[in-house]
Length: 377
Image (cartoon, rainbow, N blue to C red; front, side, top):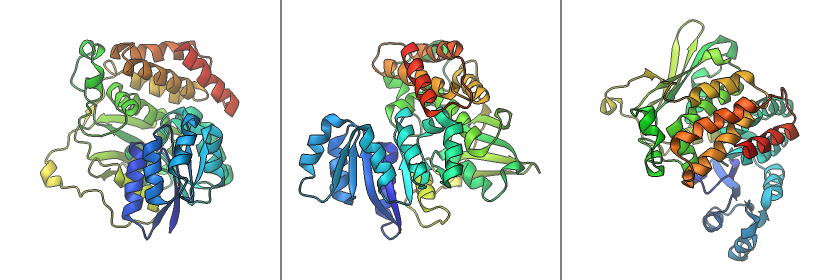
């Protein structure tokens, strides 16, 4: 029986993680849940899964959660401090880090310091603080198992093969809703169009990132830190069927790929039960029904976010934090209908151009770069 903490339990990753936990009651138990501001769903989850503790990051809803759970034995925490307390002090084997954005960094670091296995769904933690996070994980002996479908695929493809045997990592991209649109058409795309992803069901920020391919740019940075590969060893291919989740080419030129239906329950279950495998609830893949698998290069002229991602991965240091922060601000403005879709990436690019990279930054320097980039954006 593995005890599991779910950070971001009310989001897409969190609800899928709880579905996996519920389907494997003899193997997995939810012992702590945390959410940002969806306090009603958090309370429903707490009453259903009976964790020892919950945290509502938006402290304004602390009394609401206390009131709803007063008849239960669940301990209620609130705010950023409560989130870090839950992450560090709760006894658990594995933590699903499903909080979106840079807000997930602090609790992820606390989980690492307490030597828990990290089921990493918050790619921004590695993007923002890759050198710090990977160093601390090594120092504290905390394993990191990726939940992103692409990085989970790479992790599965590598298996026990040493990283030095990797020749190339190929990350696949569905292409998002605008894969066939011109740059001019994309510039004026509506919020509704950007949120209409062809294959995946995700939260609004991640879905917009998929439309700009920022999501794939972030994954380049993440792969760089997770697998110790250089930017020259990372390739992106558009794969519209979303069946091949990623591939690894080894030094002997053999290529190993991981395939499956586009359902996040599959990589989540792999991360939670690793190194074991067991019967799961993700649907089976029928290749005969899929019929054809296609691959094509990314047009970086239409999707310049990919170029920026490679640049951030190459420059390392504080540039990942700046790239992520500027994008979060720009996407927020787009979702609020205050800027055009075509304004998102130019804003990010301009902020990155103004930044002086700090190599091997401390946590405070990372937060300072994050604050600066948000203000600048």
